[in-house]
Amino acid sequence: MDKLTLVKVGGKIVEEELTLKRLLYDFSAIEGYKVLVHGGGRSATKLAARLGIESKMVNGRRITDMETLKVVTMIYGGLVNKNIVAGLQALGVNALGLTGADMNLMRSDKRPVKDIDYGFVGDVKEVNANLLASLIHQDIVPVLAPLTHDKKGNMLNTNADTIAGETAKALAKYFEVTLMFCFEKKGVLKDENDDESVIPEINQTVFRQYVKEGIIQGGMIPKLENSFDAIEAGVKRVIITQASDICHGKGTIVF
Image 1 (spheres, rainbow, N blue to C red):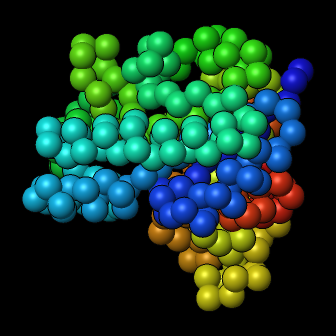
Image 2 (cartoon, helix red, strand yellow):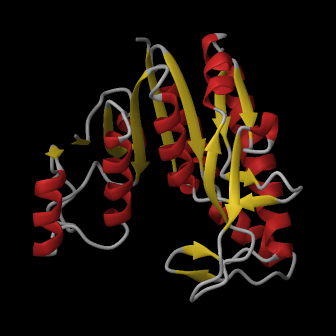
């Protein structure tokens, strides 16, 4: 089975010229088939402020009303996505920028209102993995924006980690998939104040123990839960690392 590397990078890295340049250079050096999934939240917040639209967040998740949806569609599907595509083309990588609506790649349902109304936020229901795999086999590198659609004419804001996880799971039928979640630290840390205290490997048992002891907490918990879901669904390995290490396979390996 062919190998495929799927890299998810946060908005901060792709929104600044220097870090974007470095990321794209490192990403272009990854051998074999690959996919890039990106965020772009800070740019969306900045544009919204310039347009007089208030950004509301709950537990790090954006409340997406109709006006905010227009902003995130412009930023994620437009500015950030196309900057990445142009940068990769300059490095000889035949990239194609896509949202979930393009070619019906990823369909979501609007998140039901429980305690919080998130607005136009999508929970992924279906990934057109066959179509995506056929693009990849033609040496096209998909660059996926964190946007899906409901097949009723609405775009939906969708968490980039979720897009990466669902895409990796769907592609596991066609490739041996390595999923990389990149953020600003070198991996999952044993001591959040010590950047060198990277936990080299982690499984479910160790994870539960560390959560109990308070070593792993906050936003790292859903990241790792996503990772274990991906492994259970057939993804070969998940690596949590910093963007500058995507070529080296360093970081925390989840298995």
